[in-house]
Length: 280
Image (cartoon, rainbow, N blue to C red; front, side, top):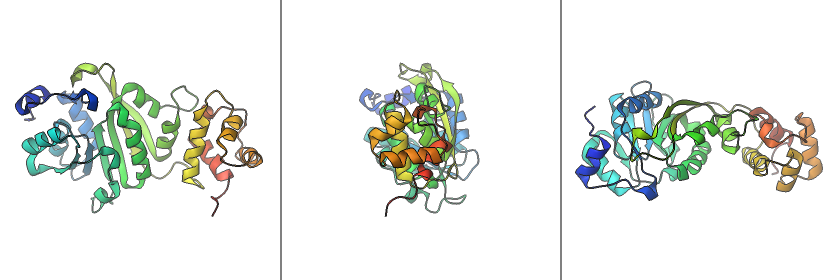
């Protein structure tokens, strides 16, 4: 690849990594190539890259024949992208949390679904994932570089300590796995934690829901007080009258004495269905 190293590019443009923005630039060619192959397995795909930064992943996505929409809100990084990649990418100077994937998917090849990729700062991971989930029908896959512990939580199994709200919500819409670990030394500057590549392959919902908004509230309530039994945690959330919630748990075949962290995606969905359709 002809793209200069992160150190060389920062020097060329008189820039430095902004700690307050969580900027750590991945420069390892092998890892970048592997991420690009996961995000764009074939040519002609439309890939939205969140936080394109200095353009190292962007360059490799382009080399694989992807049509890249680079999202970058840092004006200094946008200047680098324009200077190094010019008209080869569509540059969107915007907040990654507020991306309208429906608009970006319009006219995309392969049935109008798009891929999303990027190196996500820790403080933006949850807001970005909720934004993706709200627009999941537009997505084919997401390939993210995350803190290792965050990636492992998202790919966790029911009943484990790592299993949580976002694990359930993401796995309801996607097959999720950790593809590889990435050491701190692969970045400039090196972060203090290990990172990992998370792959989420989106498809139809894993289980039918009666009320998607209520489903989220149920799961959030179930994990909000992890030490409480499911009956007590859901009662405190007041999502339904106590007798209605008790009856719904019985119809779903779920013991109210269990804790929320033990329920699978399918069981959470069954509880939502057992509560019936949303009130008009």
